[in-house]
Amino acid sequence: MAQKKSPRIPLELHQIKAYEFYQKRLASGKEGNEIDDWQQAKEYLSQHPRAILAWNLKMPYRGGKRLIKRLLLSLQSLVRVAWKLLIFPFWLFQQIPGLFAREDKDSRTFAIDVVKTIISALGLIATLSAGIGLFVNYRNSQAEMRLTQERLITERFSKAVEQIGNTKEEVVIGGIYSLERIAKDSPKDQWTIMEVLTSYIRKNSPIPSNIEQLEPAARQKVLEKLPSVSIPVQAALTVIGRRKVENDQAGDNLAGTTDSNKIKILDLSQTNLRGANLNRANLNRANLNRANLYRAYLNGAYLIGAYLNGAYLIGAYLYGADLYGAYLYGAEDLHPKQIKSACFWERAIHRGAYWDTDKQLWVAADREANQREIDKLKRDKNSDPPNPIDCNTK
Image (cartoon, rainbow, N blue to C red; front, side, top):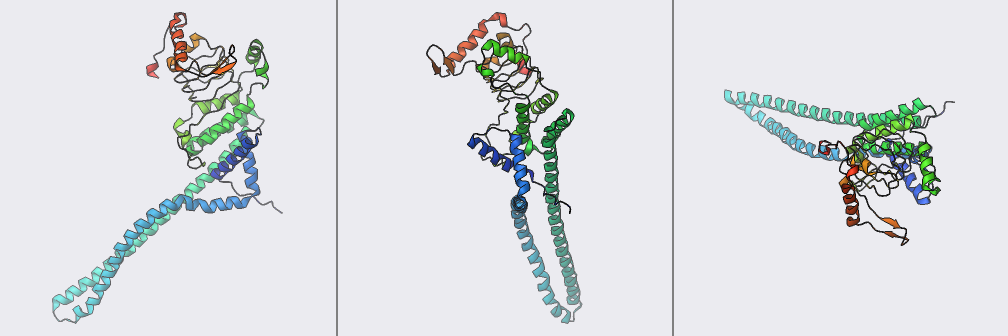
């Protein structure tokens, strides 16, 4: 007996259910990642087809509620006009017997004209009815087309997520670039795809968990000996860096987010990005805390408001990178020459809250302390780049 095929899972329902598992995991303190949440949601929905059926029945109503209101208002106006046109011919029709009963020629001619008018009016009403029918059919076909596109995107997304979990490198790379294509075709799904890719990077290119227990010199040696980023991880970084940033917020109204101004943060914390090519990548507000950026290429990268606390930056190339509002305090092995080769480094945060070893307490950040760090860099003329970049052309 053939096995019953499980129903297709709508992408929006899949996203919502995965987010529910993510919230439950956080509340229980369990470790995991977004890919596991996505797979768990898929298994749940596959075992509960009634939930999919209920969603599919609800979606046309949700998506078409506003359209129906507009149609009703338009139909109301059309009905009023049609009713008047319909009543007028009947009124004229009642006058015809009296007109034909008259013996004068003008009355009979007028009666014939009335009949012609009635026929024309009925033809107009038929035309309007046909037009309304065509319009409704067109809107229904558009709705069906959108549902078909959603199903195709869901299938492509599920296949791509399965691909990046494959053991073969070429299959993983294909899945990563498939996700990029889906993000372009469906902007509302872009941020979900970015979370999947950052989760993949954190899972497949992590920094050893015990590294914080080592002395600074020993920690440096370990970080420098970590392998360079793999080809799939670099592919994921490339896709993230060149995404259309304005689409990060596109799916908020569908993913259950009530705050449309909520800032989206790329989580690349505690990842090994040694030697990564991040040139001109958009990493604004990205969480790069304690990331290994040893000899990484960040030339022209956008790091506005990025978090680099504890990031390892020895030999990192920052030429022309935008550091406006970037949190640089706590970054390890970040030298003045590197900082001053970047753009808008005077607007970066060089001194935040810090641990005072003498007083054994946390000292809150203050603007004056930050400005002293900036003035100190300005006075250090030996670190000035020989050929300063024109940051106004960025």
